[in-house]
Length: 117
Image: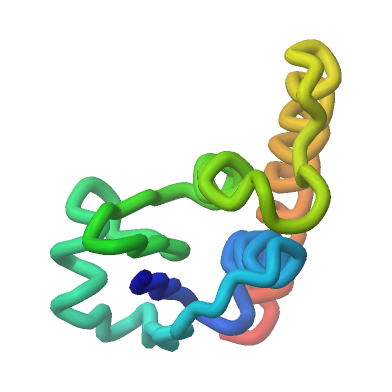
């Protein structure tokens, strides 16, 4: 079973994905991407927006951190505890707060990065 994660160490979205893989005890290869000089693999694996993270599982590509977490939770359901709740409403609440935190966090990161450039 081949599991590879394309990402950047400082990305909170990549960090979320790495946490999910580690919670499930999935062995994976991490491929560090330099976002200012994206690799051919990233360009081929995420052709729409070339963002990280991208999970490659046995040749199948999965993009966007929350979608990857959901995929990990489903594919490796038998390993460890569930990451997301089984109840659709509870799952929707979790996803709502994740998106909210992403939006707030992204604004903060952009403000901080702006201070350093």
